[in-house]
Length: 110
Image (tube, rainbow, N blue to C red; front, side, top):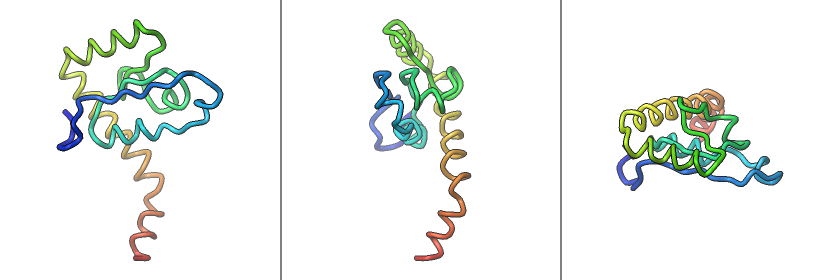
């Protein structure tokens, strides 16, 4: 499922729920989506702000959640592909749509 050269089949975005981490961005999730990888992430801000559980990724709160998500994605290739596809579509919307004019201006300035 991974893009050529990425060397992986899924991305794990794990954060401890702390005040500092809640101020981080979800960039590692959007980058993983852009690579075509399904994402399993901690159910904390910033990840829960962008991931829809079971649609664009898997959100985990406990060790049991992590085990279940990893096991499901290991055995269900169709689910991996669906999460990756939905995530990639979400990443396109987050990056391209919101910044299209800036990208166009940068392109024309070169």
